[in-house]
Amino acid sequence: DIVPTKTKIPSTNDSNTPNYSSLLKNLENIKSEFITLREYVGDNADELLEKISGISELINRTETSSAEFHKKADSIIQELQKIRNATNKASITTSNEVIGLLKLSEYQSNIRMLAESKYGSLQDIEKMAGQTSEIVNLFDKISIESGKKIPLPHEVRQWAISTIFDCVDRWEIRFDDLFKILLDSLGKNLLKESIRIQQVRDIFGIKAVDKIKNKLKLT
Image (cartoon, rainbow, N blue to C red):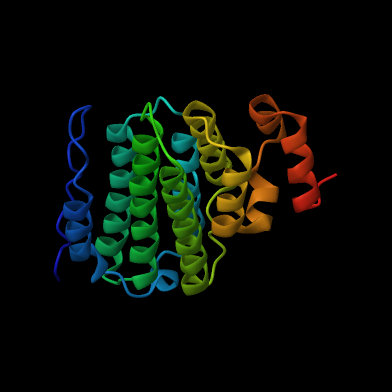
């Protein structure tokens, strides 16, 4: 039997960007080893999905370092490797879930990097909204392929929208321009579930709140 190679998580610090391409390349060694998740994970499936969903807690804590985030990802990968070694079976579904986790880590780092900039433009907001849409769609795709509902956690969606609003406030971008981008990229349903009305009021005032409530049909 081929034993999966231990995946190395790239080191991170304040001056270096994590090498995600290298990480995903290493992950390919694991990907081919997993074929039928439900046949061998059994009761462990819920536990694994719980851990993957649990990363929203890390993302929601702005002080969390990239190193800690990658450590969390690595622990899940190693756990999946142990299951594979014990049963001599594999699962493409498992690898998809791990890839989803790593993509979420990459997304989180990208959004934070953009948000840390003192100056930004409407194009930066479009980029953040576009990346948020991509990660939402990725988790929807994983849900379909795995046969189990694994949406992007609500806390992550809320964190993303809140971060975008914080940036808009700092970069002095007009509300109407922001709202159009969010509607075009993310749609009414996601905004309705994730937007924080109090934050909108604090930044743009009651008129912006009224526009949002009217457009999203909020009471």
